[in-house]
Length: 183
Image (cartoon, rainbow, N blue to C red; front, side, top):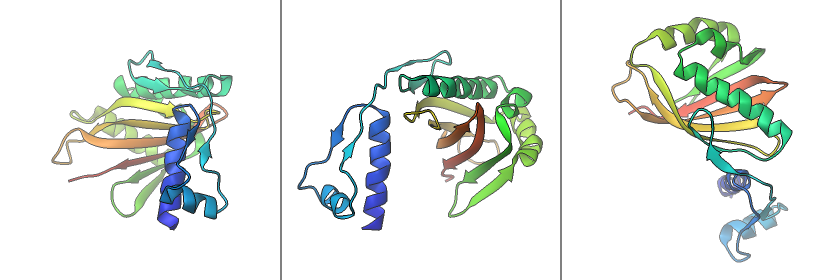
């Protein structure tokens, strides 16, 4: 039941990010378990227009000042990766930020000082790229979920599906968690 509740919660976050009230049928197993756990089965609504942004990436962003401020950070994050500008990329992170790479049962965690060593090398490596395809921001812009493809010359397959979850506070990225699967 715990896994189903977590899945229901995760689906609720994704559905709420895409706008509209989403309700689960009262007789579905997920709705019954959600209601039995004392959780609401409806996802709140808010405006969430979808359009191509300056980066050319499909974006879903709530219509409020907080989300738009975070959107500017995500757009810079995308642009600095596309331009392979490690200095500008690292400037988007807070001094106490953490980066987690999760491509196996555990995640490797890095600090900003670690990132200052890793990121310039990655961005200078031919064949290394992160191609962002879409992203969405939560209602008040505190979280961004970025979907794309990852390529690294150190792995045998290119264009590996990847997700990055960015936590944004006070105009800086305070944490990033990347998920992908290597063959």
